[in-house]
Image: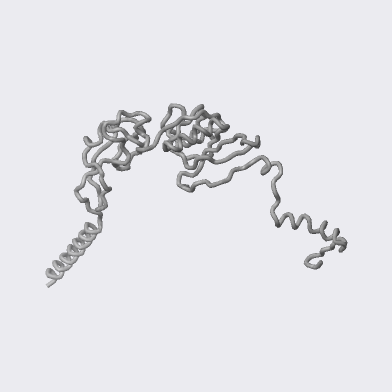
Length: 257
C-alpha cells in the first residue's frame, strides 16, 4: 500500500518542477528572430566601418530598433557620422550618406556647414570645448559710438573638431589653436562678420540644454557704473532723505523705530 503513495509523491514533485520551469521559460524575454547589427569595437566619426568593428546578433524582446541593419555587410565600408561605442546598435542616422568618402565633411549634418575660427586657451574654455560639445559664441568689440560691448551672437553651436582632431576625451582637455564649428549658412555669415568686428569667446554649455540666449548684451557702464536696483536705492537713500526732510535721524532698535 505504500508504493502508490511514493509514486504519487514523485509525480507531484515532477509536476511542480515542470510548472516552475514552464513559468521561467514564459517569463524570460524571447528572441524575435530578428538580427541587429551592433558595435563591437569603438568606431570613430568620419571613418569607414570595418567588419571587425561590428557584429549581428539576435535581438531580445519585441522592441527592435527602427530601421536597424540586419547584416554586417550592410554597414561595412560606410562612414560613421558620429562616434559609437560597443553595445549600441548601428542605425542609419549615425552613418553618412552612401558614397561619402570620409573625413570631416562626412560628419557634417545635411544642410549645415563647417567653419573654423582661431582661438586661444582662454577663448577655447581652457581646452574643455571638445568635439561633440556645444558652445555659445560671444563677440567683444566697439560700437559706432566707440563704446565697448559684449554680446552673444550664436547659441548652442556644435563643435565638430579642435585643431585637426574630430574625437575627444572629456577627461583629457586639450589646449588648441583652432575650433571648427557646425553652422547653418546664415549662421556662418553672422560668425564671419562677428570675428571681424571684435574678439570671439566660446562659452561651454550643457549638451542637453537647448535654450537660446536672447540678451541685449553688456556694455562698459554695466560694469564700471552699474545702475542700482530700486530697492537698494531706496534702502541706501532712506536715512539721508529723512534727514533732509527735517525729521532728523531715525533710531531703530529691534523691530521698533
